[in-house]
Structure formats: C-alpha cells, structure tokens
Amino acid sequence: MPLRVKLLGYFLVFGAIILVVLWVFQSFFLKPLYTVSKSMKVDKGASRISRAVAYNKNVWATVDNVASEYTLSVYLYDLSGGAPKKTRECSYENPAIQLNLDDADVLEYYEKTVDSGGKTSFVDHNDAEDAARRRIEILKQSMASADSVQAAVRQAKADNNESLVYTYIITRSDGRQSFLIITSSITPLNTTLEVIKNQMLLVSVVFVLLSVIFSVYASHRIAKPIAKTNRAAKELAKKNYDISFSAKGYREVVELNRTLEYAKTELAATEKLQRELIANISHDLRTPLTMITGYGEVMRDLPGENTPENIQIIIDEATRLSTLVNDLLDLSKLQSGALQAEKKVFCLTDSVRAIFDRYAKLVEQDGFDIEFNGAEDVYIDADELRISQVIYNLVNNAVNHAGEDKTVILTQRVKDKRVRIEVTDHGEGIPADKLPYIWDRYYKVDKEHRRGVIGSGLGLSIVKSILDAHNARYGVRSAIGKGSTFWFEIEAVSVKKHKKGT
Picture 1 (cartoon, rainbow, N blue to C red):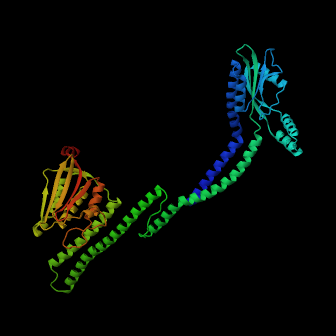
Picture 2 (cartoon, rainbow, N blue to C red):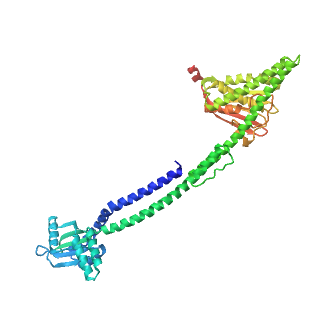
Picture 3 (cartoon, rainbow, N blue to C red):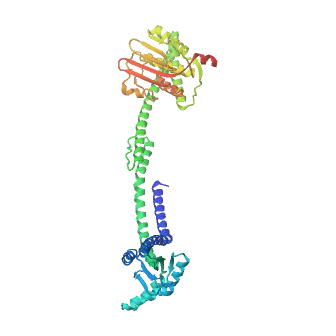
C-alpha cells in the first residue's frame, strides 16, 4: 500500500478516535464531573456561611454575598423550641434554584441532620410536577401565551431536577441553636446536554470534513518528497547518473537524498573506473597474446627462427598472462570473502629474504639496488602465503616506479609489540589528490601501459584486501619528485611464545 494512502488512513483513524472520545465524555462523564465541581463550590460556600452563623458575625452580609456568588439558597431557622420554627430567622432564595421547600421538607431535613450528628449533605431529587407548576404560575402572572405555558410544562417534565442540600445544627456564640439549610441546583442538565449534543453533531460533521481535508493534504505533503526520491532512485537503478536527489520536506528525507547523492557520485565514478579497468585489462591481455601469436607464426613460417630466445619470449608472455589472470582471480576471491586467511606463526623476516632472492636476476641484469634493513628475526601469526604476497606486491610496485637511481628499500621495525614494514622508492611520487584512491580496485594512477615491468597493475588492491582480512594498519606517504613509502603494521609474536607453541 502506498505511503500516502497509509498516512491518510492513520489521520482519519486518529480523527475518529478523537470524535469517539468526545462523544463518550459528553455522554458519560460530563454530568458526574459537573456534579463534583458543583459540590466543591457549594461546600466551600456552605462552610463560609456556617462559620458566620456560628460566630454570629455579619450573618446577613455573608449570606447575601456568598449566596449570590455561588448561586445558593439559604434558610436559617431558630431551634429555641427544640424544632425548626416555621418563621425563618433569615433566608435568601435564588430564583435559579427550583426547590419547593415546605414545612414537611424542613422537618425531614432536620431529622436527617440530627441522625447524622448535626451536619449532613445529600442530593434532593425535586418533583418535576412541582417545578412545572411553579413555572406555569410565573408565566401566567406574566400574561404569557398558552403555547409558552405548554412548552414550560413539557420542559419541566423533561428535566430531572436535582439539588445539593447542606444542613447544619449550629450552636451560636450567644448560646442559641439554629438550623441552617443551604441548597444549590445541579440540574436540570437535560436541556444543557441536549444543546451540547446538537452542537456536537454539528462539530462532528465539521470535524470530519476538516479531518478529511487535512488528512489528504498532510499525507500528500509528507509522501511527496519520498515519492520524488523514489522516482529518482529508480532512474539511478537504470544507471542514469544525471538525476538529482533534491527532494526536501523534513530532515530524514534531506539526509536520505544526501546519501543517495553520494551513492550516485560513487557509482558514477566506479562505473567510469570499471570501464577503464576493462580497457586496461583488455590491453594487458591482448599484448601477451599478440606476442605469443606473432612469435609462434614466425617460428612456424621462417626457417631458423625456432631459437631459444624466441621460445623464451613466448614463455615470458605466457607467464605474464598467467600472472594477470591469477591476480584477477585472487582479487575477486579476497574481496568476496571466498579466500579465507589460514593463520600460523612464522618468521616474517625469512619470508622477506626469500622474496628478495626472486629479484636477484633483476638486480644483476638491470642494475637495481634492492635493500633490506632488518636487525632481528620477527615472528607473526598470519597467513604466510598472503603476507608474502603483500610484500611481493609492494616491492614489485616500488620496482615499477623506482626512478633513475633504481633503488628500493625495505625496512623492518618493531615497536610496542608490532612490526612495521616500509617499502620506499625514489620515483616520481603520487599526487596528494590521488592518494585516497590508489587502493581502489578500479583505480590506476599511471594510465600508460609500460612493457618490461613486473606485475599486473592490481597489486595494491590485492594488498588492501589481504591486510583488511588481517585487521592490519596500512598507508602511504608520497611527495612529487621524491618517491613514495608504502607501509603496514601487524602484531608481532615473541620468540618465546613461538617456541612454546611449537
């Protein structure tokens, strides 16, 4: 499923959850929460009035202020006769409270208060018919129409009137006892709830429309840069390197496009280098094949050309061809992980000396000066064949770029239980901007194909793969016109440890 459709669905589901929560809150929790809030306010006001009555201080002013502030009705009766007198000592009737308080009700409240120890509170469910009669009387007195009267009757019957009632038997500071009744209406809520429900229906319709509009817009806005990046990535898969990853919108998309832009640059460079490698390999393969074919035809067609010299040329070219193919196979196996290192403890110094013996003929015939500086025998735990291949390739690379003095120096040093091998030539050097690329599989600093040199041109890639497999450190220092020094470091094994192991 497309991201845009999923996001649209998520936004719509989120909107539906909000609507459900609002409806559940309005249907089940609005009235209880309102009742609790109202009870806290009435309790606070009742406490202030009861204290004023108890201390017999500013009773009338306190009743008037508190009752109007908290929408209360207050009734104060004298208890000098042992029961509430019919004549109220003080009263404040709020017109918003629909409570028909007759003598029977007062006596019932008094008895409840006595049973509760002098203080109680409860909810009184008022008679809807009594409330209706009160409304009708008010409407009749105001000369209202018959339709208004009937509407008032229907509304009163529909309302489930409830009032909070707080009662106190108070001993005042002058010794008298009084009976205090404080009431406040917490209903009718039915009318209010009906209004809220109608508003909720309207709000729900508007909310759904806005949710759909916002969801469509937001999902399109979020998915658009990803879709644009996806289209560009498909073009990149088709090797279209002119494509640009420029989609924006949020940080992750920007970072993804930067990564893909970098990948595009690297892929383009890799493909270019790969084409160069194919051209180079084709040239390197074609040259010895041409030489072998040419000398073979000469020996076949011309009498007297079947000489040891011509045969040696064919053998040398076949060896060159075999070396190139073997290097390609080794590089492929090393980089794919198919060629695993077979480690064992061996003398690295002896391996270096054996490699130098292979260059004896080169030193003798071509005047090369190949030096080895190593004061002690060093043992390491590694793949002897592969490490020897590393040293051979580094020396071979130095010979190919030795310069006019034809000097190659191999130095062996041990420091902090690690052996460091350095191979130095005094050749033309490597430009600083090309140093990071010389280990790449498809990179070649020298674009010219020179004959008469040893190696296939893949030596440094093989060196890098072998040293990576041994977790060894390696690098190069170079200066134009002064030469280059290739080095690597690997952990050394002490002689005692070596002898104990054998």
